[in-house]
Length: 503
Ligand code: AHR
Image (tube, rainbow, N blue to C red; front, side, top):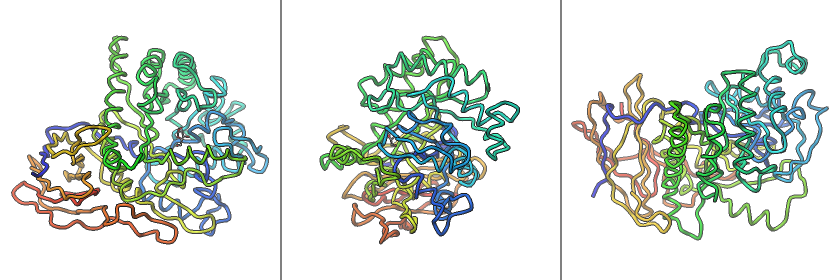
């Protein structure tokens, strides 16, 4: 039987925040060095930023850019990353056992953000692992205060006359994780986050602050962590963070294809926890969600490599350089759909990461840059997933998975552009072998044509883009979709990501 749903502008989830299409630049592996920054590269600009990478970043359509970590931030000394580049210290980075040259720092990052596209904005993390309130305040003053104080004048002396105007700040990173440098209990972190938030607001009432939630839904402390941290910080922060990575384990591809089931339940459980704390505090305020690390990541491969031998402090090593298949891109598209379906509460999200490190963009030092399979769903969602998310009640045939039980074959969302009235449907068919017919009924929508029908799928579900074959996988035009008398009929290819633009 076909899957079905109704598109009706009277039923909406909420407005998509532009920040839903954020990404992440961490000092990790080759994300920064030979990723976005390579002064000797033939396409580098006067600041050392790779022009070929910047062009792809703009095409990707990223918005909030989280920096400088990640686990890296828990050893970060902001003052090492400012001032004349050749005078900056080399430091050991305990998180990734690498040597950090600090050749690229805060000012270079802000310059990168300015060139990364019209909606790009910085999202800066402060170190609450090995540092605290004082250093957070110093960084905020250096970055954001116009002038006339020691730290703001230091920024001006370093060549940045204009303040950086950073609005969005993360209060540490994954502080629930035992792997985190300076890991804390929920009570310890909740107090520190509250005091840091209070102090940062004393400097500037309008900053937007993200408290650390759980590193995944599978953490033993999940939900209790959020409840304890929010009990301390509820009135002081705007967001709580979520992180989730998915991979195919033990050859169980059917469960992997249903990864968004976990992501959606994670979101709903965090919303429930936030609202529970709000109810206990009799607060009218709602805490929103910052899903500031999400992706497919073959973490088991990374852990096996790390166990085989710790790194011996290299500079910019090849770390976490996953090469994504068509199957990975379909799961990735489904994760995007999960975020859009919860756009009422998930108002910040960052694809982790941007270049080379579990990234949609890959580079070769001195060589080319290219798009991974996952580049395409993100670029399409960022471009067309703007406006109001429609509330879809999806009726779909199901399949059985080991991890999540019975799961719908169709995962879908639709976004209405409120200026033009155009609607874009994003859909994933999770079946590995069968096409899925889909019937969509349009109610009250001034739609007359299918403006675009794009599909990402391949006869080889393991096909990928590589240095030697960078365009092996690209979206292709879909065939056979029919729009007649307010009914759209389309057949979704097996294991596919589909975008249908109706105007
Ligand atoms: O994105 C890679 C790493 O994953 C980040 O540094 C950390 O926050 C998470 O565990």
